[in-house]
Amino acid sequence: MNARRGCGCGCGGFVVLMVALLAAGYFLVYRPVTVFLSGWRVPAQTQQIPAASGNVQAPLTRSDVQKFVRIRRDERAALGSSFTSVQNTFQSIQNGQTPTFWQVTGVLRDLGRSVGQARAAQVQGLTREQLSRERYNVIAGGVNRALGVPDIDFGKIASELQGGKLPDFGNTVSTGASPQTTALIQPFKTELTATAALGLLGL
Image (cartoon, rainbow, N blue to C red):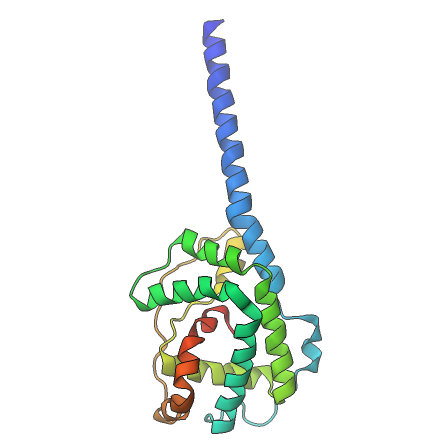
């Protein structure tokens, strides 16, 4: 009798602990990741974006950089106050710190659906600037290399977490920017540096 009562108390405590852990996992990891991904996916109005044409891999021009600056400005405005979270993480990475699991999931939680607003702003910007997504990605890659943006993609991290895989939170800094690109971004470097954290979101 006593043994059974003791086992019952122990099992009851274990069940309570498991329920608490599952609840914590849901609210601290699963739900933030799901909400983030629902906003991060490309909005439905993607068909408005111009189709790729010409040599999308061509060297960047001043016009390309100007278009990129205007679009990134819109993305930053769309994130609003939630930009602070990704900016703080970006700064810690710049200081040589590897982001922790909880730091990354905290960013996903803080961004929530606002990342969807930023993605929508990107689509509107591409349409307005008559810029294909393929060309935009080339421009972003060149600018990010020139700024030394770490090679971390929160969209990919969120997808891996949703699939039950623990991502590698290590990072490498993008390098190899051409002298031409480095020179092109100089007039806009202050603003681009202030919004460089958007590169972690694939924006």
